[in-house]
Amino acid sequence: MDEWYDNKQIYEMLQQMKADMSDLRKEMAETRAMIRDYNGLRQKVEDTASKLSTLMWLTPVAIAGMGLLFTILNYIGR
Image (tube, rainbow, N blue to C red; front, side, top):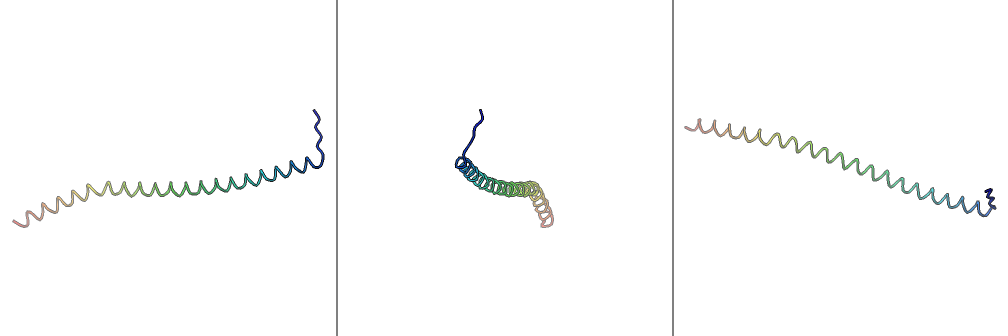
């Protein structure tokens, strides 16, 4: 099973390997860009969730505060 290659075959194999490596580098760069974009999107989603959580907490507090304010103004107005 000894396979011997001549110089032309070795040169062609090396050229193919070079092309494959170049394609691999491009794909890796695209993957890094996609991961970077995903991490940025993930951070934005976490920030939005945090803001929404704060808003969900502030809304009942604001409603209760307004109810208390109107109650006080109702007693003062009498």
